[in-house]
Amino acid sequence: MMGICLRYMNNEEDAKDILQDGFVKVFTQIESFQFKSSLYTWMSRIFVNLSINKLKRGVSYVQLEDDQELADTSMTELDAQPSWGTLTRDEVLMHVQELPDIYRVVLNMYAVDGLSHAEIADALDISVGSSKSRLSRARVILKERLNNLSNNA
Image 1 (cartoon, rainbow, N blue to C red):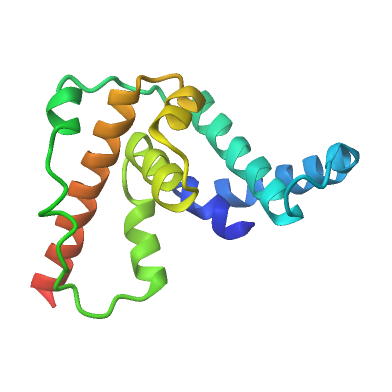
Image 2: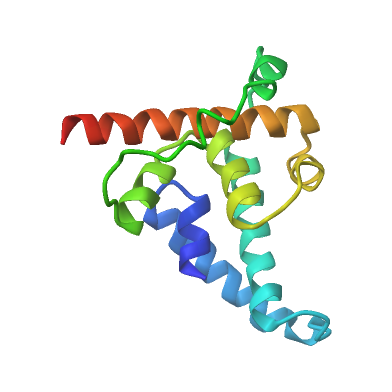
């Protein structure tokens, strides 16, 4: 569960706070678990929701002016095989954590948690186009950072 918290929060202290709050919620709400999914899935959802709620309270989600332009960006170039060498999971996680909250959250929800843009838009109270553009922008920023890392190596 700490891994989930670290993906959403940009520092370890906030992640630890969410982790603690999440386990308190799991133990106090365990009777609501209905065995319709695995316990892991149910618990993951709690930790993701707590993380998103904390970010919503602490971050002003600024609407991007060029949402549609970013949403229309072709992913072909971004998805090409990178020449970043062999990065460890922790190195990639560190760069994901450095993304601005509005991009990191959408990237995690889409790429890691497997949510659709409609589900992301609903959870974050944004449009589907904003979800798509934020994912696109997150990929561009992450790719640039990882390319710079490999160019400096």
